[in-house]
Image (cartoon, rainbow, N blue to C red):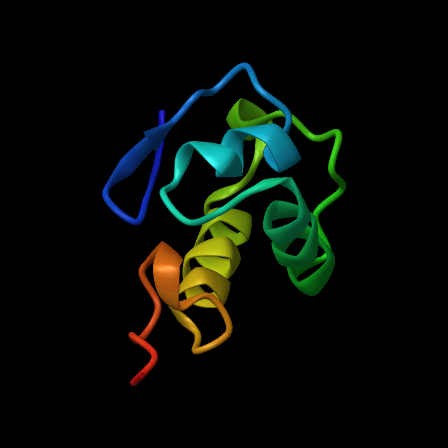
Length: 75
């Protein structure tokens, strides 16, 4: 089972849907993450390689997605 941002991602879901299990990530944000990492929306989470999961973790940790575990925006 993939674990990203402290959340267990459902293994039988498509990447686009599975990422929405993470607080702060909706469908549009999940699509942006998949696009940025080059992962097809339709690939199942259980079929993602460790390298692809690491790319997702790095993308979420970037400044672009502060609600999902990235750096908090100062307001």
